[in-house]
Amino acid sequence: MELNKDIDQFDIPLAKRTYLNNPNSALLKKLLIFSPILFLTFSVAALRIIRNVELIPLNNLKLQVERNNDTRILGHLPYNEIPKEKLVLIEPNIEVHMDMRDSLLNMREEAKKDGIYLVFLSGYRSINLQNDIFYSLKSIRNQEAAERARVSAPPGYSEHSTGFAIDIGDATHRETDFETDFENTDAFRWLIKNAAKFHFKLSFNKDNKYIDYEPWHWRYEGSIEALKVFESSNRKL
Ligand SMILES: [Zn+2]
Image 1 (cartoon, helix red, strand yellow):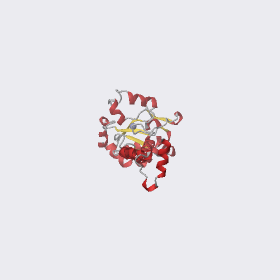
Image 2 (cartoon, rainbow, N blue to C red):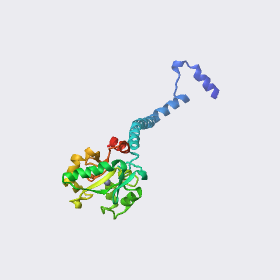
Image 3 (spheres, rainbow, N blue to C red):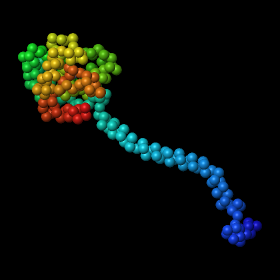
Image 4 (cartoon, protein in one colour):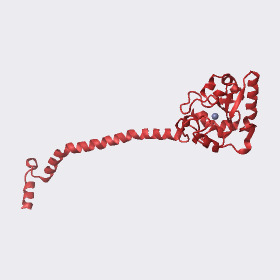
């Protein structure tokens, strides 16, 4: 019977054939019924592809930004510790890089001639000392750890470990030591006017978006070695 039916079908001229009983036609009907579902499936798949295509450049951009900042911790760049043989003691408890000693002492002498008394608060700090400062709650500024992140570099990330950084105060206004208020002293005004002549530069000024303003913290950029040390800092900020 099956065979006959097939034969019958092919006996009918092509134009008059009815497709209603044809298995192919049943498939067509099923396709018509399920077409909205298929349409939705394809639409979702297409949207996913489009979304992924858009996300690829965004992800790349994000990676790039992360890559640019990946050496920073809380906005601080990593610094190597100065080799011990390059450290010189300029007064009790103040050691600095030998490259900057003369310039620093000259600056203090020149200031004195103008009636300004600079006091050196902190020079070279070892990574170990920086570790204590960063993690100890009872450090010089008596601040809590959360605040500290903005005002103190993590160990291994301080300019002080290079020997090229110096914290300066006004000998006649010691209450402003390590305080933003130092900017209102004659010593600070003198430094702003004259420090560049001695190759000193304010490291963290008011427009630094990562680190709080530190009017007392200056760094030396008067030698090739110093410039190399601060090259990426000068490039990125
Ligand atoms: Zn400092």
